[in-house]
Amino acid sequence: MPSGPRARRALTSAARRGYRVAQRLRPRASASDGRPAASVCAELEALTQEGRGDAAVALVRRELDALGRDVVFLDLARRAASRAGEPTLQLEVVRAQLAATSRLEAPVRARLERARRQVEGRLRETDPSWAPGVPAEVVRSAVELLDQARAERGGGLPLRPAHLLKIALPQRQSGYSVRTRYNLAAQVEAGLDPVAVTALDFAADDDSPQDVHGVPHHHLRRAEVPVHETHDEHLDAYASALAPVLAGLAPDLLHVHSGGRGYEAALVGGAVAQALGLPWVYEVRGFFEATWSPDPEHAEVAETYRRRRAADTRAMLAADAVVTLSESMRGDIVGRGVPAERVHVVPNGVDAQAFSPRERRPELVQRYGLEGRFVFGYVSNLDHYREAQELLVDAAMALRAKGVDATALVVGDGQRRAEVEAHAAAVGAGDAVVFTGRVPHDEVLDHYALMDVFVVPRVDEQAARLVTPLKPFEAMAAGLPVVVSDLPALTEITGAGARGESFPAGDGTALADVLARLHADPARRAELAAAGREWVSTQRSWSANGPRYQAVYDAVLRDR
Image 1: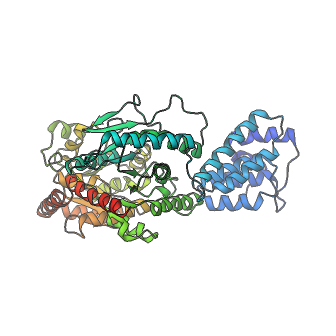
Image 2: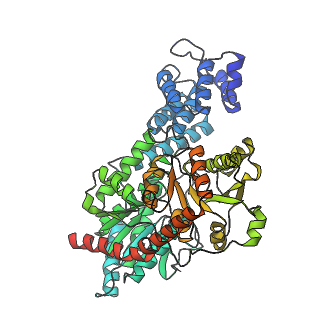
Image 3: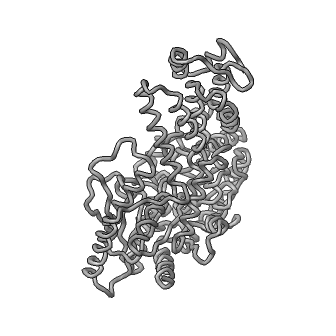
């Protein structure tokens, strides 16, 4: 590794400022192999910036004893452990930082104390022995309220499930909220009486009930959100806020849907359901344990991944029943030890009347320069690497090289848009790719209609392998032939070629080959389009999910 001036240049400006402070406060330590601390810090900084988390963590573990009072090394070590998803090591480093910090450095100690509490909170919420707490007086009051609300509601009424949601319409438009909207409507159509409660501090104008397509939604709001609130403190507050609201609704059972980290809504819902004596169902909408990091090489092996996966599994085992979106997801859940008879599939669906084939709007064709071109594309957010919109760019370039006047249409926006656009610029894509950005909801179907083929280019990572996205169903209903990467959750949709084509995940050249064949064979495109629309219309309508939920609820209540 570089030493001397080269090592110092490798450090961030913040680290160099830390060096100056450290040099005034205490003499510098040496590494376990005798190297200067500056050299070790430069190596650690480089490993972290290069995303080599395993090597960075190994270096921290090896040198923590020798450099356990070097404030610059400790600061870099804490960041490395955080980025690598190793919270236990991160906590060890923070505690070493506190031990190495003078009592006179009050602002620094305050920052480190906050960091310590944050890491402890993240560890506590995934600890098997911990659950959100509801104060005894809140439980007593909520139980009394539940009895009163049940008496006022009376008997002989439709079964009432209370849905605990991460987000909801109209405040948030996403695949999550669209699934919720249509499935709750399907429950009403099936004769159920659903109500909904959104997560604590979800963005809403106020905490008054709000109907969303005829289903009452209640929002848990606080007058003031505490500054620097830790994960476990938030979940404690969430449970305390939920208990009285849920009791006042007098539900027959609680239906918890995955939260932002997956398991945290189930931790809260399970604790409150137990306190109120309610049965509860956990709807696993995705496997979120691998979403903590954008690094596909490390996301599924780090401590954060293992702890989150274990916490989600415990929630599945604790629930009276588990609902999920596909057979691929069900297989994973059963593989975790959840009894197969308690795991039920309620698939994503589509409103085949709302999403129906239509003609291209000439003004959109002109706006995007698509006249006379073979157009393929994807409608999705650009937030996560799993969506792999870069493959669309590569396929468009390969098709152009084959003499096909093709354009990749990327519909949507998100954190990775600049990254994907940079890739397009780097390969000189030019008008071979069009980025529309975010489009109004009422124009989404018009953008589907611009495409000759709809492509789901997801790469091979856990959620992509197992979780079925909503967009292919919409594309099929819109009358588009669908091409997907060959991952189980996606080929389950295309039916092994009966309703769509597939290509090896991550292979842009193979995708281009499939698209070239479809470009040359309009009859095959029409055949796939017709088969896909027929399948979603008959097998994946949202209305069919109402009876599916009814059967799950009946089984849960019968077994109590």
